[in-house]
Image (cartoon, rainbow, N blue to C red; front, side, top):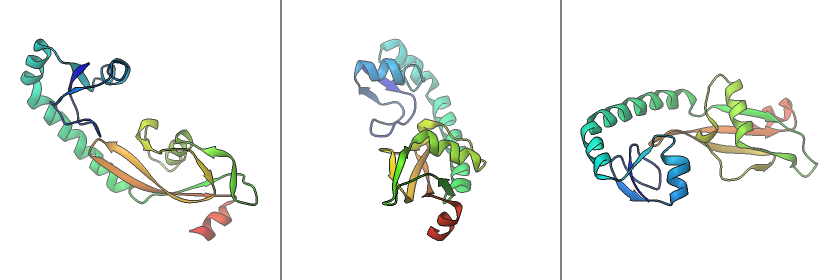
Amino acid sequence: MEVILLERIEKLGQIGDVVKVKNGYARNYLLPLKKALRSTKENLAVFEAQKAQIEALNLKRKEEAEQVAKKIEGLNVVMVRQAAETGVLYGSVTIRDIREAVKDCGYTIERRQVMLDQPIKELGKYDVRIGLHAEVSAMINLNIARSEEEAAANA
């Protein structure tokens, strides 16, 4: 299916690009979240008429995301978890856990903004990327330890 992108999408394209994507990706993600329009003559005309507004809105969102990124950059988040003597966690730290920990620090982010390839399964310090906008991201420092004292010692 060909779609017209209404915002920049990482690894896909820029605003206004006509790209070919799989049907499920378009129907289940891009179209419902208003990130793209089906590529038809009518939609191309609508996009061209609203292109300036869409780009201005994108610029405004980017500026807001940059302000939040300045505040959240380098945030130290401590998570206390139970682990074996070898340092392997009983369970794992997921995107949802990281979101809740950042929320406890006073910042509200969505699950889809946490860029984590796979769950964390060991104690230690990790850098986690938070995607605040398609062009703006911030890194937070995640410290997973058995206790607050151990976390302070690791820091």
